[in-house]
Length: 496
Image 1 (tube, rainbow, N blue to C red):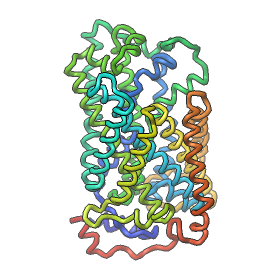
Image 2: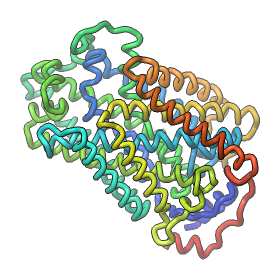
Image 3: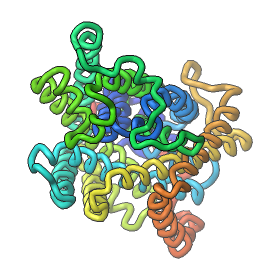
Image 4: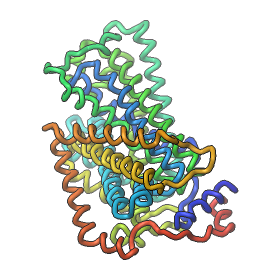
């Protein structure tokens, strides 16, 4: 297509030849970001969380958190419309500030994707391992997670078209299935359910187990939607495989955040109102709380249906995480930021997938899975800290680039924040700092700070002992020169 030839020529201005396959359209781009967020994973694995911290009133936190995350998303959309290159935050920060800063951002982003992939697999295993074993051990949970990771790796090796097709099914299933069951539950709430909490649950301020509600508890409760609304930037990371990425990626990210945030609030509220026989009994009974609510109110058939929806949705999230992690690894390897970079960055001539990068992502995710000891919440908290550190550094790079005049212009008609760019980036910095503080300082989150500190220490040592010299000598980092646009025959071959 002529538009793909234009996109390929556009990429050449950043010093790269088109090697990945442009197979992602508007819906697939949205579906990928939506699956990365995966509200289903949070609702099924941490449904009891707001009730144990704040009571049902904690569900309202989805709305302000969505608004806060949207500020970050808008800044990312502005950058994605101007620098449509795989590796998103790494590429943007390298070109706005410098390759050393960009390498730091890339390392943190890569850590977030590696840990995020493992955390999604562990969340999936924690929900469904009890369907195989009555009381699964942590090793059995890790086994299920490992099998899921291996399957996601195999699909990604086949190529981005296969991954995108399956991800589309997962995202559609999540939207239609979860919202559809929610609509049925609303009908039940209005006409059929005898035992229910009703709307009053949304104003309940009595946490299960007691305890006072203060600013610290409020912040910790807000971490639930904050942990959920992560990964929406995946659309920007696949810029080199997207048709018209300058236009497609910003739209996909904004839509993913809005749909996920609003849907997360609505679904949580509906099933909270449907809780039978009291909140405390629901939270403390032995089954998954949400499965318990659905089976009690709608029957075992509905419970089985929602289990299938959850399985498909969470696997789609895992698949999307592997895809996005692979592209960040590919971007860093292509620029020699990582050891054996040029070898890792080789792209299959048949599937147009960076197969070696896919395998490495799978190996690291499996390793984190084995080291996690099945501690899903702790792995998830580490993921959020790494993600928000990436957001923080990108906001800093945005303000720096705007003041230095290093942010490229975009063609007329593409997404732009105009004079609101710096103010929103400034608010994004403050927002990210607060989230990182709540994700590391409270005693229950110290393990996230510890693990993330280890990751940062490894990155600093690697930069000081090896990478700094490579970047200073010009052997590593994004290319400064452009390349000749790919010949027409190559574009025709890729579109065939």
